[in-house]
Length: 266
Image (cartoon, rainbow, N blue to C red):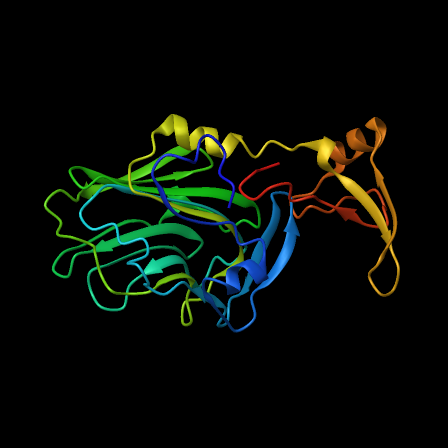
């Protein structure tokens, strides 16, 4: 995953979820999550049934221990009913996870004796069918805090004194029993706290790059029939008619949104 300048320092785990072949080299893909196009580039779609990705625990992947850490992820869901794990490292305590419950963002840390939770209420709504950048910061000498689309939302009671979160559990995106129902992109774990400015910068860096858009006509077998960059008028029309799912109301044969480097937003 190619990180932009806002995402470099302290990133200990990164996964764009944009290429199945690449993911299979480092993780187990369970059931049938699929790659889809979106306004943010290629993303992974989970069916809400049993799709998830298991990165194992080789090399103690994302074992943050007793240090500050941050979870940064793009999600899209319309499911305002079910419990949906976004990312988890749990099984045997200690554990942590970020999920959507009742349509609201929710986070939990558990050192085996103390459980502290945050969110899961009307202040953290995300199940509206739109893309959201969700962030959880975990300050081991202070509190957990949640941010949505570059805006601070809520903080927890103090987590100071919480024991280590280091564990032998596998790191998973989505979950077999609380499967995410929607799309996920650009998962990053940092071994430090992101500032509000950094979080806002990551969110705002999704700005649409119209110079990268191409449109194609395809033969029945999927081979490209034509390939041409859009002119300035077409770019303006697309900008004015772009829907949240990356489609347009312009009646083009197909709009292919170019995922021009993993980690970039447009």
